[in-house]
Length: 157
Length: 197
Ligand SMILES: [Cu+2]
Image 1 (cartoon, rainbow over the protein chains, first blue to last red):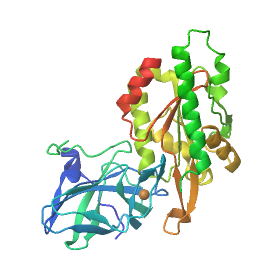
Image 2 (cartoon, chains in turn brown, blue):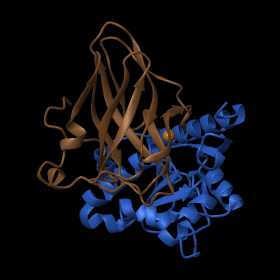
Image 3 (tube, rainbow over the protein chains, first blue to last red):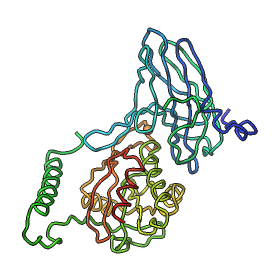
């Protein structure tokens, strides 16, 4: 199953709906899952999300899976001595009582080998695997190429 | 090791020289030295999408916002290009006096994937330049920026690029004016440009 789920009537009436959905698994809350539109499918896409651990046990994000990309990976953008690179992240810690953001300029899901171009307004599922809490599948909203994040009314800025 | 010791020393020396010259200009009551002696004028000669060789002379009289990057970069590069696009939108009529440039540090792949299509999707005013390896290295050296290709079997096409992610502002006479470090908000870049235009 490599087809993208198109955001249809729902997206038209509530443009920010997908990225503002909240998903839970165990003590973890996953929200603000979004991606950027791509030009064609030849370049990798990106995946951003926020994870809150309300429990008292540390957890970690250890993997991604999605029908939208053949090779999704966890990356971390590192700017050191004025040079940016994005090494592979084996896992992203989600400490007890904290919120961790995969956000521009830091941790991100790198969606390599895209099945198809990501178009603004589309959405696609991503399954996140946590070391302790297990798996949860979230809907990812594709925002514009120039987006810096979803605009959710409840989002604390 | 991202920068060699020598590169760090060169950077530091350039910074000190700039500061020293600035202090001299501010503090000295003597006639200033001819500007040509102190100005840092980075240069490039790189083809655009139509294969026309472009140099800073093509943009004389305009400010240039120069970014070194590559299009297979879904995290850092769109952030900077989005900021540049926002600045160009917000400049209004003054946008005609600013030329944003993306110089590809991954030119072979970017030409194959389509650099012009990528940059203009952010803003129609952004011009993408992609040369050969020697032209690219010469431009980077002239701007004193770092980039490197790292073999990485898990990366697309088996390699990843690391690079200086700052945005450089060049004046209408080709002088290097300043850099905006990665993540500088568009509003700050806009305010700086508006104070100069
Ligand atoms: Cu990445």
